[in-house]
Each structure stands twice: as C-alpha cells, then as structure tokens.
Image 1 (cartoon, protein in one colour):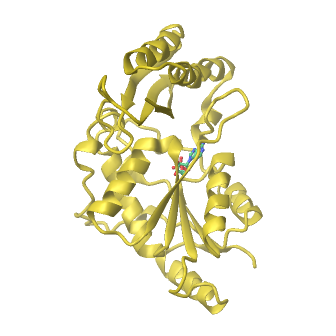
Image 2 (image 1 turned 90 degrees about the vertical axis):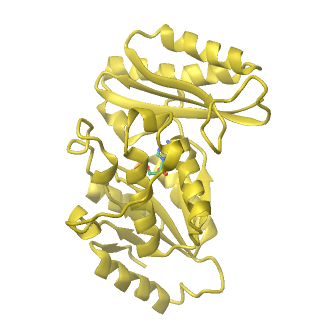
Length: 285
Ligand code: AMP
C-alpha cells in the first residue's frame, strides 16, 4: 500500500478510517504506532520507524516543525524542511501515513490552553530553552489526541524530552505506550541530528568533542570522576560553547548525588558556531 499523505486533521481522520478499512485498526491489539518528527529525516528517525513497525501493523509519522517549541531567537525559520525526501524515506520504511499539518491547522488562532512541563521543564534543557518543553508536550499531546496511537516511539537522543513525555503520560493518564529507541550515531560517534547539516568542516570536527566527552565520562566510576573526565574533553575544544554538562537521574533530570546508584544520564548541550547540539549517554553507577 502506498503511503497516505494527510495534510490536515480531516485528511488524517480519513486516513485512519482507510487503515481500518484495510483491516488494520481494531481495538483488540496494539496496532497503530506514532513516530513524531520535525522532518529532515535521517537514520535516527528511520530506526524509530523500524521499532514502530515491530510493534504495530501501521505506522504514522508526523512531520511538523512545531513553532511552539522554538524560542524567539532560535532557528524556527531556518530549520531544514525537506518534505519530498522525507516522504521517500517514509515510503521506504513501510510507513502507512505521513501526517504533515500546517501550523494553522494545528493551532487555533486564539489558543489558550497548553501543557505545563512543571519543574522538569525548567532544569537542564529547560533552563536554556524556557518554554521549550511546554511546547513539546503540548504538540505531542495534540498529536496523541489526533492520531490516537497505541504506541508512540521517541529517541533517547532527546533524553529529557523522552522523560518528560513519560511523565506527562503518567501524570495525565494518557492512554499510549511510550517506547524509547537508542541514539543512532555516525561511525565517528557524532549523534545524528537534522541540525548536523549546518556543520561546516571545522564545526563538524569540533562537534565531535560532545560525544567524545560523553564517552570519556562514561568510562569513569564515580559521579565526580565522570563529570571531570567529560568536562576536560570539552574544555580542550575552544570552538565549543557549552550550555551545560550534567549527570542526572534519568526519570527526574535532577543532578545525581555522590551516593546515586543505578542508571544516570550524562547529558551535554553546546553551540558549535551557530548550531546548537545536544547529546547524552546512559551510565550505570
Ligand atoms: P526531531 O525530528 O529532531 O524532533 O526528532 C524526532 C524524533 O527522532 C525524536 O524522538 C528524537 O529523539 C528522535 N531522534 C533524533 N535524532 C536521533 C538519533 N540520532 N537517534 C535516535 N533517535 C533520534
């Protein structure tokens, strides 16, 4: 079956009905999976589509550059938009529906109510991008309500976003199973990102210090050693302007104390030239 393109909520509803008509959607088993994206699709997104296909008969990929999650000085207008290529990727991955609404179709002009990310929305990524996680949760909840998936798949590359979505689903009793997929990297360690295409030769080389720092930290044993080893790598790369390097509890994103046991996330955010990048690894203490 060809991939169905739904450009607005009415077309999405029609596409859902069409999947049902092909015997896809019954309520008895988990059969519809959603992979939310902002497009400019790469191998990281593709890995999530494959995870989604393993868990459901039909996969819906949303392609929506969500204005609500960009700050006024951020890259909303220059965020890469490559819809034709994205559609080809989705078709190659056996996606059933690509939902690509306009901002006007997603948001009422007098929109008032949104999701508040709470405390977790104000720390780490939230401290540097005020309102960002509120905007993410608001669009994700809307996508859940429009698509009504049984399963939704997100990348661990955006670890705080994934933790926040799990929190929202728990706090608001959202009827969807959240699945996290591993971070896909280039052979040299750089985490794939739609923003990597902004990186010129020198910036691309400097950007590698993010993953190098995380891997250096992940080889150490105590929180202090982990933080120090990662920091040393970043300090040695003057082209990297650090926003934060944190070692945090995976569920709350609160700083891991010296007595922290079990998994922790070592997360970094930095600007390389004008491109802001984030990355993280999981360490076990
Ligand atoms: P984005 O289009 O950047 O908003 O990302 C859409 C989804 O893809 C999110 O769940 C991201 O966490 C995930 N994602 C982005 N980059 C990667 C990557 N390198 N590996 C795995 N998942 C990723």
